[in-house]
Length: 120
Image (cartoon, rainbow, N blue to C red):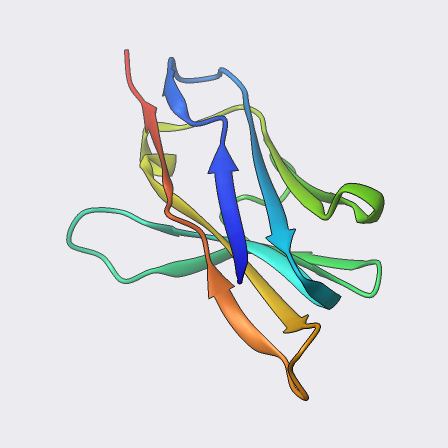
């Protein structure tokens, strides 16, 4: 089986920083893309940032504040979050487009989510 495990969430004051990590494990043939989504209470899950083939994209709402990066050797993706705002409060989910070793195709996988709360 393949799994994604997030870490790094917590409570931070406005203007503070957090770094989220997501590690993929299991029998993985390849990872095509990794990204971060978030979901606030009462709202739909939205894309925050993705990295694919070395190219990164992020939502306008976090541009200039969040940075996504990936360590291919560790099968890990990071989300550096700076200048956090209360509206960034949400559960952040890691997502990966991965091909298991025994599979002929790739699938989307989700982590369990990590809570980020920005509050005074």
